[in-house]
Length: 373
Image (cartoon, rainbow, N blue to C red; front, side, top):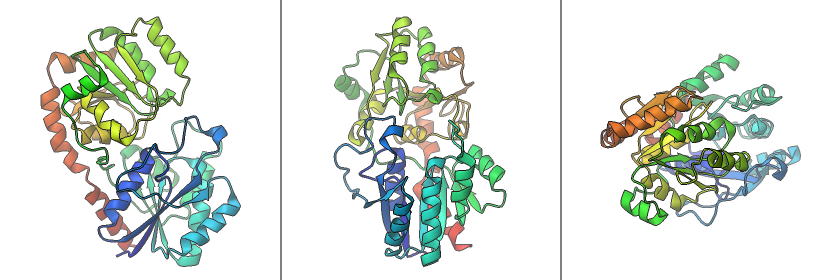
């Protein structure tokens, strides 16, 4: 059993889904272990970061700010960071891996800490090779993973990629737990009032807007859903103008409301509570933390059949799975959801289904996997 665990990666005061995951992981590990988290002082160079800010807005209740010691692009810093982590005397070093850009940094830190302290290394993998592939992705990932003793993957798609490149990897497949850090649902009528929504039917797209996440497909589907309002909530990592132009071109200004900014934690419940269903029109994916946020608020999900989404969304039970890049199929599924009045049935099913996605399950698998080394 481990005594000292150090989580290395995105963490508050930095923002985003990885930071939320690491905060919850640390919180649950602390029930049985001593846990420290260290994060970046520079996560991305500004020239490569498409968003408005890399930092969380305001404070997070119950989440201490992690020491910001790592510079993702400075090799000399990686050596200093390793010696700083050494002082924490880790038995286990955990990295959340989602982008090969971090492979050289994570791999070097892991290699040095292992050499100095004898710590074991675990990579929890969102992706092996990302959707938007770049030169060097495989090399950087191989470099990082060479230092890992074991892995956690969270979908069949990621498992396949891991075994493709690392057939001898020691790993467990564990579903992504539900995000429970956004509070409880509020009454839908109250959420509509606070957002100034008059419509009776409201669907939600939530999260960063990137081409592979398919918001443009959902906008095209909205042509057939004139009695539905779409809340498109999330910061644009793509050209926002072309989305707004498409809405204007299709005369959908009264049906689509953009909230083109990063949503602070305390406001997430408002948007999910206002929605009848969450829609993920992705063109490609391995998995999506948005499903786990939706399940936290007991919301059904309509998504495309890419990556591991169909592993989490049970078709015709907690939502619908439709073909990707197909506005007509997406529109038909949304129409069916309302026509057959599925909200209450699917919501009750979500309450049962989400019990599979517990943090205790993830922690138990980390402990069992690590103890068997």
